[in-house]
Image 1 (tube, rainbow, N blue to C red):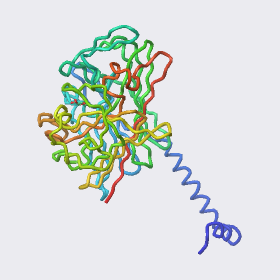
Image 2 (image 1 turned 60 degrees about the vertical axis):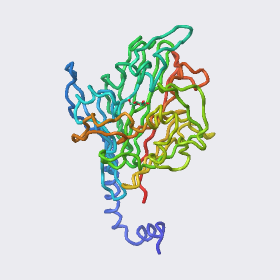
Image 3 (image 1 turned 180 degrees about the vertical axis):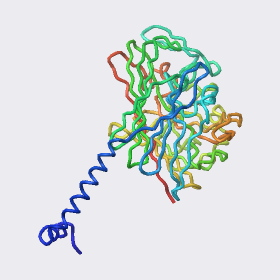
Image 4 (image 1 turned 45 degrees about the vertical axis):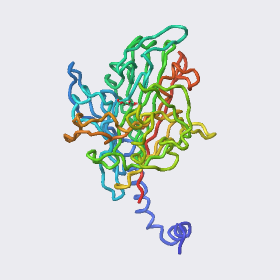
Length: 393
Ligand code: BGC
């Protein structure tokens, strides 16, 4: 067998003429590569809000059949198409066909959540000795940023695509005291889909001009079967966490970090979501299923760490989630009740989607022992989460 050096040697020494077409081929390939630098996010109209503001849909594609679509309303991930084990592509996130669905909806499908992901007890916290009251929209508590969170704001999008990835950057400036939160907050969410790998990266960046609290996340609901008429109860979940934060009956953490071992909250090994979800367990009753924050195990390495893995045995799709965040909220779609009319007219029923929200812990501003969510002027908030897709037999 000829190795490539030998082959090159033979070509050079024996027939220089053959080099010309070869050189032409190399040049052509180079031109094709250079064309790759023209990667572009596709833009289309996504209608107008009730107030008449135009909203756009941005489609990121890669060279392996993955497609992610994001709208400027809520910097929302509205569609994520990935292959199954036979190469069949399907959309694995819940959402609506029209803008109206996102405006009226209360389920946060695919939305960028802020300023504060998950709950703040009584909508109240103290910062620098001052008490802040934010709107309560979930019983006695504030959920996902208050009445009009970042998922219901209009973001400005810029195509930052590179030769190796489609990149969409969305920005929003939240004025001082919006929803009661202190400080003018400038926030960016960037979606990156590499040309050659099936992973969607979400980077968050923010700055403030006053001390404030911040906890950003994405609220996609996954159903890896690609068929949201099926539940997610047979999906097998792994969470890289030895502890979770138990809650009270209003889903506010008690402050305890409890070992998962020996409880239905132990997902240290791949386990079907439905295997223990109906057990007689107080925490499961409070959440009407899983609706809790897990404390992620960290290795010595800084940066992105594995947080979760979901495997759907029917399609073979695998979703791995990596994050820089210390926690993950696993919500098993317990409040879906068949009233939300989703894509293709599908009514999203009980537990037909699951959310895995990488985040700081709920209600951290009221729990000094939890990792801090305070952001100060001159600090830069950064957070990254990667959704990595593959398949398995
Ligand atoms: C919360 C749930 C809530 C859901 C959507 C999750 O992050 O923990 O309690 O119902 O978001 O609204």
